[in-house]
Length: 161
Image 1 (cartoon, rainbow, N blue to C red):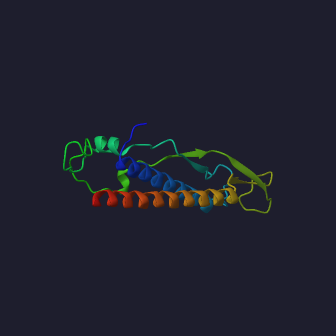
Image 2 (cartoon, one colour):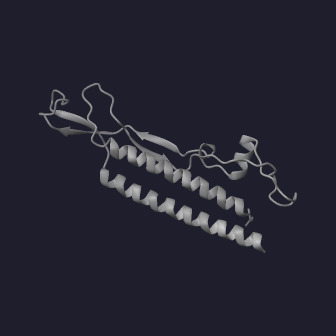
Image 3 (cartoon, one colour):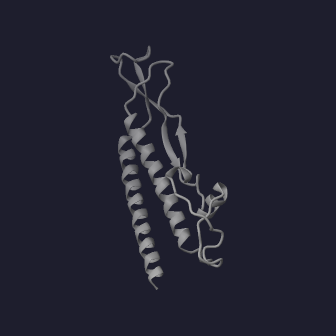
């Protein structure tokens, strides 16, 4: 097993935080549009999910892509890092958002957007499932922040030695 150093922890946590934030944004958008109604020929909102495999990128590959590096005190410390950079959230890639083109038909002949058979087109979104996804994304986000805190404490303790 190869030991990657403290920066691999920060890289993984940053990727996890970005993915969970994207997941939360997607879930909130789904919930906001769950009751959207479309008439005949109108576009309808499609449920979105996040592909967590997309957007994976390590700290060092981000530095190479952006041609950035951090300062170092010795060549053997933090290989490949030699300049300072202010990190912005847009520097980290977001996970891929996937649209699912499903819809459901609800029988409501009194609705103004009902078709000639009395059906209304709505997005195929289960709000309970979306709330469950929101809770798991929130818990994952909290777990990532706990790991980040522990890694920062470890780095501080290492510098004290």
